[in-house]
Image 1 (cartoon, rainbow, N blue to C red):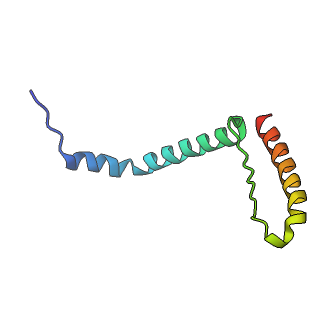
Image 2 (tube, one colour):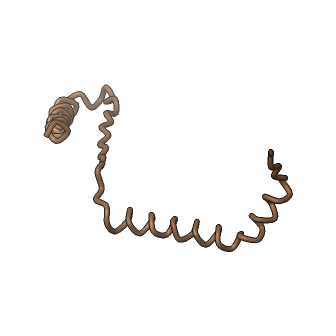
Image 3 (spheres, one colour):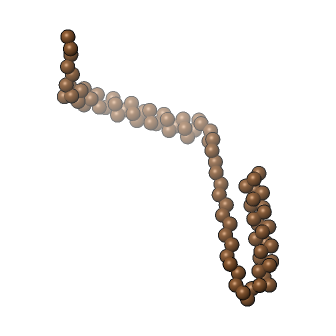
Length: 84
């Protein structure tokens, strides 16, 4: 014998048990949130540094060399931090 289950019957059961379904879902969500926030350790971190160089004007050629040296020193330090 084949038993037929109607969609109407399923909806009645879901409607009858709606409070339990919602409660179990919220309890699971809350438990997962507490565990992931307080118990688990962070595994991944990231940092970003951005270097921008503005083009120098023609009347600042004298300061341009000093600025280039300072810029290059900052880049070296930044690359060193990235590598280590």
